Image (cartoon, rainbow, N blue to C red; front, side, top):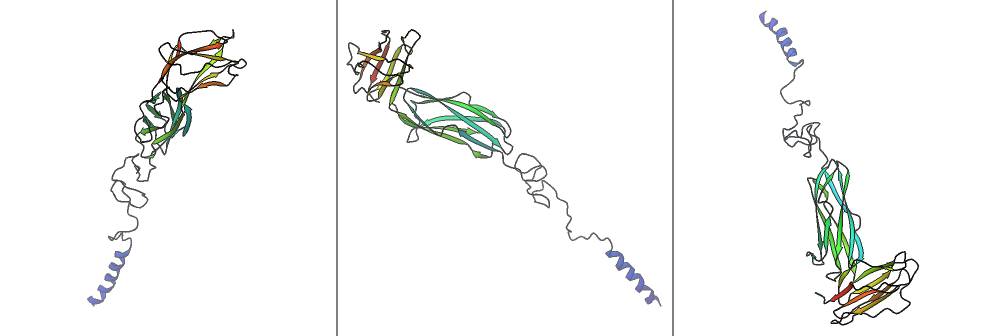
Length: 278
């Protein structure tokens, strides 16, 4: 009789064990723990911390890597000797990048060595870029009147906290083996000269006296210094028409004076010194 009573009790006990059992074998609803180094459900990354801005957010979602791109407004530049040229460098932040960027300019020859005779200067070497915005810096490239190189690469390298992007930009520069002196007329019909002094140029370079007047001709007078050979020929009349140039290419060293033979005035403080190539 006692054996018969045990059967129902045992049956109830077995049923009770299966109702609402959470189990101990690892169900599908395990909670994600950001920062534990394991990519749990609903996480796309886990770098063992809960900091933002390091590529994996405080909720363990993949963050875009801050990006910086550097560009220059001219990738090529054709000019001549004795010129000053402006280049604009643009810094563009994206994917959350913003902050200070350090720019380092350089001028390199064909062998990738510094071309020290050409100079490059920035209006600012540290540029603050707005978050996901742009900022600019202006570079001044100065090419000397002497031929100490006719081709170079101007390079701009950027340093910042950005993790990806284009951190360098460059301009290929070529310079004609010539220099130009502009002359124009004032309201009284007299030549307006550049500042007094001596322009130095290299043998076999060309020098151009450009008539910048709109209506009148200009004739250039050249005269050798007493102790120096005359490297130039006097320009014949009627001289250069507006917008045209009188050009000479000296083949030996020496010094000359120059001024407007017509219409004048005569001056004695403008000289050209021709030196040997270095």
